[in-house]
Length: 238
Ligand SMILES: Nc1ncnc2c1ncn2[C@@H]1O[C@H](COP(=O)(O)OP(=O)(O)OP(=O)(O)O)[C@@H](O)[C@H]1O
Ligand SMILES: [Mg+2]
Image 1 (tube, rainbow, N blue to C red):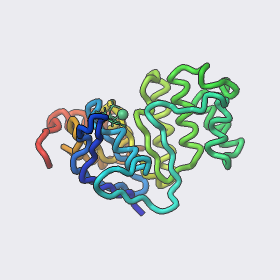
Image 2 (image 1 turned 135 degrees about the vertical axis):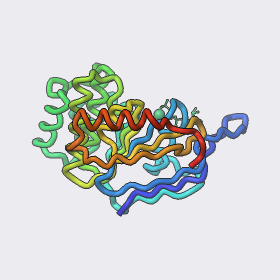
Image 3 (image 1 turned 30 degrees about the horizontal axis):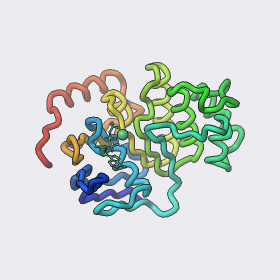
Image 4 (image 1 turned 90 degrees about the vertical axis):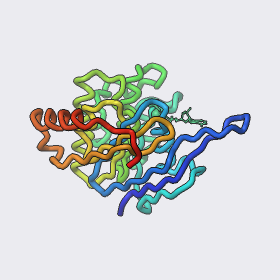
């Protein structure tokens, strides 16, 4: 039971028929319980890669294999809520089996209790992102795909949500793929960091972090940061 990604290429064509190469050959796999982090420049192809992995874009060369019947939780880069449904309805509609207790727990952790009856148009971007996170967590996913889920949140809340992601991943053997521009989020949450080149994206460096998440105190994090700085991502193909 693994998520296996082996992409040989992905090209978009514009209206004039010109090819726009977005992904170069790129391969990795994730085991249950593992958090992979994708870090790369804006526009390099990260969200495109996630859409392919989720099966939302089938026009690519290569292969992606997901465990059959895997439950998938996804936070898109834009929160994508149904505008005519309340916060609570958005989560319940996406996850009809969610219990009242779990919903209450998620709304408490994500500080959404007072927003249950609000419509997406009444929310700030940070609040909308929290609803998208609640929806992804409520699925109790086997595969969790997060596209910059902590962007536009203040540091205190982002820290708490980071802990919540770590708790979820620690509780069940979830395969998690996280896109972030924050090296701090990457080293606090990741088991393996994949540094991507500018478009077309390929993996230019893979950094495993062997210290278990729960034991990464500030001293360990500082050491990992120093190690990463000492050997910056080189842009030669692996
Ligand atoms: N549907 C599409 N049709 C044509 N080109 C697209 C499409 N979606 C994305 N692209 C192009 O593919 C490239 C990669 O886009 P993508 O959204 O995957 O980047 P990203 O790494 O997620 O960037 P960011 O960090 O800014 O979110 C960009 O040049 C983008 O313009
Ligand atoms: Mg993106």
